[in-house]
Image (cartoon, rainbow, N blue to C red; front, side, top):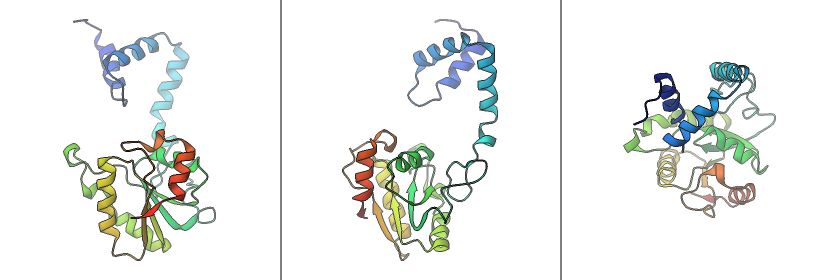
Length: 199
């Protein structure tokens, strides 16, 4: 067993928190950082320290804001009759890149997965209902990954919102099973948006 210095082990442990990064990759990243110039490490450290203050989350939709102003909530720029419910901040940018959706967004942050400690109350359905009523939303689009967790979450939200006078739809099922929205090419995602089906 290789005995790395304690601080190097701590750095490796943090790097392993990134999705898809195992021990070997984390070790490679850590040793690469040791080769960086001091100024680059300092700049990275400052960026990470100020990350949340420089990239605040909109309290209404859950998207990233630009200096506290949320372009995704502006009723002058967006179609307020549609609400697209997504599970990740990065999904907003995947959908926006298609130029196929002009409406509002709502980030639920987590898909349902009781085994991983992600339960229904964390979805905060009351906030979705509040936005539907506030803007008199006519269509709610459930744009989740095509996975077991995504399907479970979509079904739960459909049941919770079914009493409201809104059309509930999902992305067209041309998306590959088990796929994540961030890895879907823009053309396929655009066609899925346009071909969304009542759910």
